[in-house]
Length: 272
Image: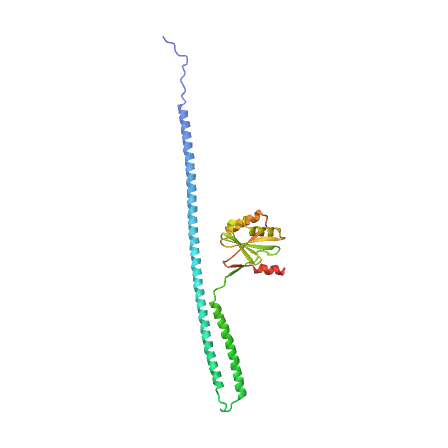
């Protein structure tokens, strides 16, 4: 008869514990994945909302720009109508004065043809009247000359517009030297002369280097950049060169497209 195994106890199985652990790990994995997906969706929604806001802002800005353009066209049309009306008034005045002058000359001719043997007249009164008429004729001739001058000036080609540069802040305590910045170039203003320099040639141009050295060695010297609407990129490049050379500098905006007028600073320098 076979011997009975001494280990009579039952084996302990770990399968239920491992199953529960696997389920817990799977559940946690699904929760983490859901949170990550939700986070990505929120970012995408936020980006979509921000994009929609930008589109609405762009549409608003575009509408405002179109409105300003229409107002500008309207103002230009009104100005043309006013100029045409003024021109017509001047032409009518010139015509009227010419008619009056012709009548006056005719009267003077008639007076010269009066017979000496005619009836007696008050010579003194007639002389005084003739003097008054001559004075009136002289005055009218002067008016005709003035109106003719105005008409001739209006027929001249328009003068180049100017943009006056005025100091910002206190405007005292420094000696300014000016460099104008526009699209693709700078213009050096010195002693009433202008020297254009392309932006790509700033690092090798002797005139620009000379200006930087002059301002750097000048007591209270300051290099003032005059920035046009399209010259911001050029200003940044030129300013970096000035800063690298230790040149004190500042900036002023140029409003408009006319020629730069620095007469304020010229007069100020002469008076100082």
